[in-house]
Image 1 (cartoon, rainbow, N blue to C red):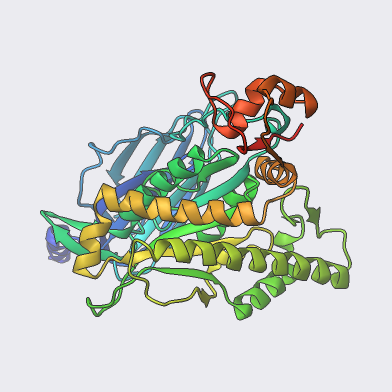
Image 2: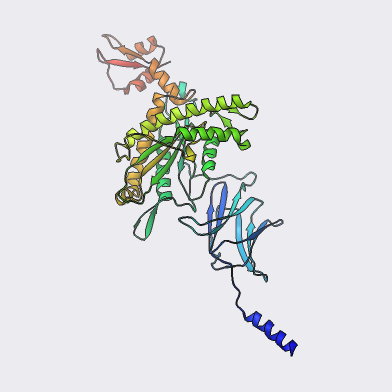
Length: 453
C-alpha cells in the first residue's frame, strides 16, 4: 500500500507544471566598432552563472528557473565577434545560453533594472575583440585635400569630436509617430552629427570625427574617452530635448556649470583610474607622478582653459543657430552634464530642439533641416577658431598670414611681374590671393593683397 501511495505522489509531481521564475522574451544585439552588446529582455529579475570555455571560444550563461520564449535564429551577427547563439533547457530548470565566439574576447555580464523604456534585462558586453592585423572599416568621409599656400600645407587640422547622444538600446527621447514609426532621438541626432561631420570636413584646416557612427551604445565616460583618444580640440554632444508638455520648444546650447567643474576636479584627484590620464590636450601631462597640490593646480588651469574655450565656442554656435531656429533661451545655458566634464577638452552640448514638440519634431526629421542645423553649428565653430586660433594649426597659420598681408595700391606703369618681383612672390600667387585670372587687367588705384612669403 505504501509503495502504491509513493508511486502516486511521484506521478503527481511529474504532472505538476513547472513554475518558471522568468521568461526570456526577446534578444537584441548592438554591434559597435570596438564592442558588442547583447541584451536579453526578461520578465523578472534572475540569478545566473557565467562560464568561459576555450577551444573553441564560448561564453556560457546559465539562467536559473528561466525559459527562452523567443527565437535567436534570425539574429544578425555581422560586425560582432559572435558566430552563433544556442540554447538548451537543463533538467534543473536552468536555461543555458551559449554564445559561440569567433575568437577570444573580454566579456562582462550584468543585470539591469527596469527603466522608462525597458523592463528587466540581462546584458552581455563583449569588447576588445579586434584580431591582430585586422582593419576596422569606417564610414568616415575622407578628408578633402586642402588647396592653400605652400607654407601652411603641413600644419595640423583642428579636430572636432562629434558625439551623437544615446544609441543602441538607449533610444533617448521619443517624439510623435510619423507613419508607423515613432521618431527617436538617437536616430535624429546621429543624422545631424553625420551632416555636421561632413560640414566640418569641408572646412580647410578642420577634421570632424564621429564618436558614435552607428546605432549602438557608448557610456558617457566612454564618449569623452574616445574624444581624448582622437586628440580632439573640441567635443560637441548633439541631442534633441523632450518635455512632458508638448508645447515646450526651442533649441539650446550648454556648457559645464561651475559646480560640475568643481566636482569633476575632485573626481580626478580622488580616483586612481584618472591618475595616468593626460590633461592639457595634445602634449598634455600625466598626474600620476605629481603631488596633490601640483596636480590640483594643473587640473584647475586645464579646467579653466577648457571652460573659457567652451563658453566662447558656445556663444558663436548659439548665435548661428538663432538664425535658423527658435532658441529656448537667449543665452548659453550651464549644467553638470557628464559629457561636458573633460578638464582637457573644451566641450559643448547642443539641444537641436524639442522632439516632443510636434512642430519641431516635424522639422527635425527632415534632412533639409538637419543639414541647416549642422551648417549653423559648423559655422559657429569656424568663426570661433578663426577668432581664437589654436597654435601650430593650419587655421593659426592662415590667420597669421592674413595679418601679415601687405596691401599695395596700383600706380601707372605697374605690371604683375614687377610687383611679384618687388615683394618676392610669384604672379600665380598674386592672382590666387586676389581672385584674378590670366585675363584680368590691372587698374590704376586697384588695391592688391600681397601674399605672405
